[in-house]
Image (cartoon, rainbow, N blue to C red; front, side, top):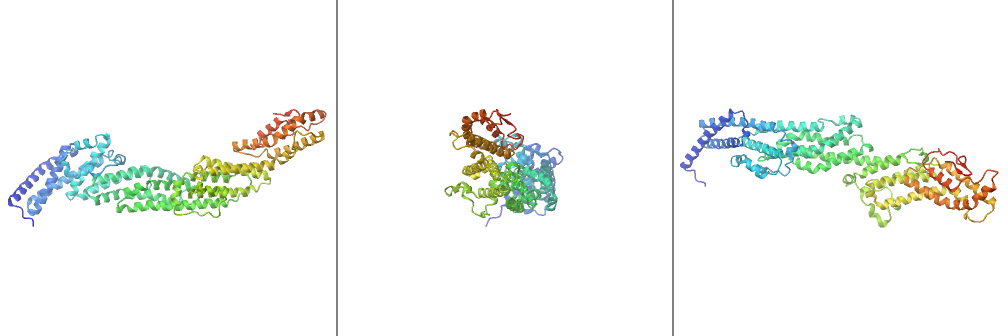
Length: 597
């Protein structure tokens, strides 16, 4: 058992108590009439807070030993006066230091801990704050030094008021001022309050898309600067009271945070058409990237609803993406356009699908997250030629790669069906070559190249060459057949004439049919022209070199059957695949001396 204090100790404590009251009376009364801020002079601020602490100890002594003493009343009046003054100082510091307590300045103190300034307001009277701040933060900019000083002052006042039983008054001021700052910042960032799902549903997409862009530009600043800075400030000012820290931060930030993180969920419920996919992915990516900060900043139990709102937005956005990707595949499969593309050019479906899929490839990481728990089962086995040989299956093994490859395959199957609509078989092959070449180009130019692998590209380039070869074989077979197998073999002049006539007829027929056909890709166009020249030119040039001159001399009085020089053929081939009939009739634009240019 602890022995009772001696009379000498009691006398000493009573004497000290009276001294504390007298000193507090002098300091508090003197400063009560002073309009200048206490904290404009750090020595006076230290002295004032020290007197408040001593007055509090004196009151505790009186309550314990002289509960009916009139000195209690006097001490209570002094304490009320001091608290009113500190309340005023607290308000003034919060208002006058807005520039130094703005979230950006505060959030700059990312490594700041409550111990970085002072452990309690009692330290204010025991340490020279200016020296401490200078010693610990000598390298930081002046703005951050001012921010740290303002937070330290607020903390010292808050601890004094809370310790004296005036927490309610202190907290009320803090919540009102800081909430107005947070609300104003969110307003300037473009975060809308009270936006309902019904309002979002009634918006035109163009209007909603503008709001999405505004939200995307705002959310990072709101989380990493605004809410993060506000959490640091709360943790600093009320470092000695976890319940007050939680209460203040929650009341200040919860409403705005719920408006911020509730918006993506409302967008996710909007009409889920494939065209909206990329904005939904942008929203998902933004929330997902910021989740670690959201979880840390809103870690209090009372802000769990903020965390759950962000999680719900991710869930709904993920659901929307999965639905839209399924709808996109369905739209490809149901494409029922019956008209053929003039000249065998690019089909609108090819452009649309490849632009869409190449954009999806930019979100492969996000898509992997969204589909992580949704394994993809291909409705039917993909052709070996599409994915590669069994020995190289690993080249396209990621789930998202398979999903995107499947979408491309679905489109290519539709293109096969559309190719069959052409009356000219050779044009159907040219159509397939053009569209597959476009697919390969989009793959090479986008992240699809990394997802589908170089082997995928090489195999499909071989398929393009196969389509081109089929086009040449069918489209120019009569021209090839019109020439003798051995162009230098000796034959009769009648046979020579027959070969030239057959060549003229076959070439003109092929050229007139194909001069309106197109090959949009320059590399493929040159490849086909060179291939055609290699297929036809050697035989014709050899035949022309031996018999062309003789045949012309024989028929000086009549129309020559030798209509084309080798240079003429090169000129005509150079005009092919631009989709224009401006060249006119081949026969009328050629002469005995060659083609008119």
